[in-house]
Each structure stands twice: as structure tokens, then as C-alpha cells.
Length: 431
Image (cartoon, rainbow, N blue to C red; front, side, top):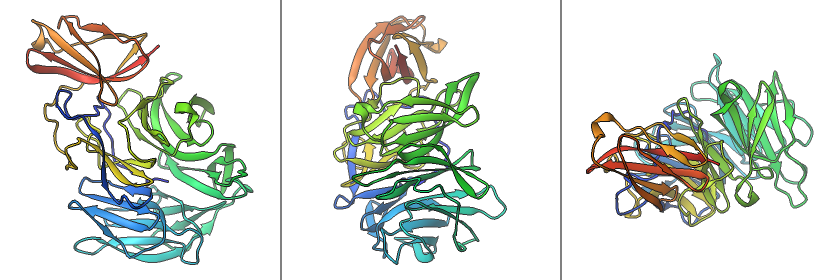
């Protein structure tokens, strides 16, 4: 279960490395906590990272990690405001609870945690901030509860009506809670048992959660994708058994994107686009992959050394980069996708290019439109895979630059005229 972020993420041309021409391509680098299994991460700025682990909660600040006093496993972290967070801690003890953290400490770990409401195995949380009095939703085994939120207090949690054994029988888990459109609560879960029963996707109506579909749901998000008359907001559902599903709530339509090698989805996140399909970044046992909902092919983002269990952006993705901004919580620590010269704080691109809207091409035919100031001479185009490997290099006329891609998938290109970068961006090749 990951923490939910309300930050605005820029798609534009999503470049996975600071500058295509640099010597060092980005890779996954250990940020720390290599002796712990990471359950969730909250990182809504670039200076601080909160990680929920199997041994408690830790904060990364000024290139060091600091532990909180809580020693229960932490499975969910949710931000309420700039100074208040909620923490779901416990794995079946009398100390299991939703804790509140208030930023009143001048230095690490910054937040003072205090017990709020008992709740057995709080593995997922979501908040509705659109009401006059905000509501916190907490999910556990076969249960979801709701409580009103004061300025720094969570009032008693009340059980919502719940379908029998919606998340299984043997070892049920609420994997995720998500506010679709900011107002509609969806809940998803699955059975972790050996003889697992079916999980469910649920939606809240009044005070009752109702079954939408029987699925082993592992993660929920929202994105804009093509469908019907144009771009539509869809619920993105990661599952343990069906890959990734795109669900349109009004028309009740479903689109399936199979996982690589049919692996279960551990977590997913969305990078929204402006007038173009969103990008889906998903964590599987074999690594972190990217897809835009138009194609069946997933492209791997680097080669992460440990099994990724949760993923999140580190602050807002700006400048069209994932480098230095994509975090993964793994079975052996927190990893940052960055250049391999050591962990660095985020910086501007070394050689910033003019970044175009993503190009969707059919059957490999790619046509670019360069700024008129770059006409004349020769244009050199380099095309890279998501992992940063050079796929091909071509020389074209700047007045009519075009080339062909042989394989379906996601690619990143850079066009240089003379010694200046004229254009760069992402290409989605649909066969």
C-alpha cells in the first residue's frame, strides 16, 4: 500500500534521464534502510522522505535517516495538511491504530506521533477534504471505517456497511482506498492466504460499500485516457490476477492491460498528461515498468536491484524528468532513480531541451516538427529505450524530419541541429 499524493504532476515529455547526451545514464540507487522491507513512502517535497517499514517509520532528511519511536510495522501514511499526517501502524496487536503526527519538532524526526483510534491492521487510508468537516477512511482486513477530522484530532472511527468476506476469507487485506474525482471512495483488496478466496473492487454509496467487481485489487489510482468521444478520467486498478484495468465508472466499461509475464501488480502511480493519455508506472516483482494505456507492451524503467513493493514521486515531477524524482520502496530498502554517481538532490537538466507533447505514432512512422529557428543543415536524432539504451541514431532534414521505429513500445528521443538541442520528448509506437 502506498501513500496517496495530491500533488500535480507534469507529463509533457517524460524524459527518464537529465540529458540524453550525458555520459552517466540514470539507474536505481539505494537511498537507505537496506535492512528493512518498505511498505509505503510519503515524499511530497524533495527535502524529506517518510518511509513506513516492517520495523516502524523513518524519515530521510539532509542525506541521513532517522527513526521514529514507533516500533510497529507501518503500512500506510497519509498527509492531511502541511503540518499533519496520519500513520496506520500494526499487524494484529492491541497497539494497532491510526496515529496522528503533528510537525512540532524543530529537527528530525519533525513529527510527534500520538495514538488516535484503535484499528486492527490499518493497511490503507484515504481522506475526503471536500466536506465541511474532512473524513478519514481506514481499511483493514474485511473492514473499512470512517471518522471525522478536527484540526489535529481524529474522532472515533465508525464501521461502514461491508459485503461479507469482500477481501477474502483466510488472510484478507484492504490493499488500497482511493477518492476518485476527490469525492467517490473506492476500496480494493485481496486474500493473502495460501488457499486465497477472491478479492473485490468496492464503491461507497451512502454508508455502504458495494461490490463493483470481484478482483484481487492491489492498487488504485486515476488517470486521463482516450476513449469514446475523447479524453476521459478513468479509475486505474492494479490487480494480483488480471494485470492493470482501466474502468470508466459512468459507462461501466473496462480495458485490460496484461502485466509483463502475467505478474501481479504490487503498486502503481499515474503521471497525468495535458490533452494526452496519462502514463502508468507500475511495480511488479521483476521491476518498475511504464505504459500509457494505449499499448500492451510495458517498458522497464532501469533495473532495480530489489523487489519493488511501492512507488511514488519525490515531490512534483517538473521539467519532464523522472530522474531524481521517482522513488521505490523495496524488500531491501528505499531506492531513488538517479544518475549512478551517487545519490544527489534534484537539479535542473544538464542540457535542457525544448520538450514537445508526446508523439503517438502508428506502425512506427514518426514525424517531427522542429522550430523554424533550427531549419537548415542536418538534424541528428537519437532514440532511446526507457532504460536509457540507444535504440537508433538517424540523420534527417530539419525541414521534414521523419524516421521509423520497428518495435512497439515507449521511446525517448532527442534531436540536435548543429550543437543545439532542438526538440526532445516521448514517442509511443502503436503497431
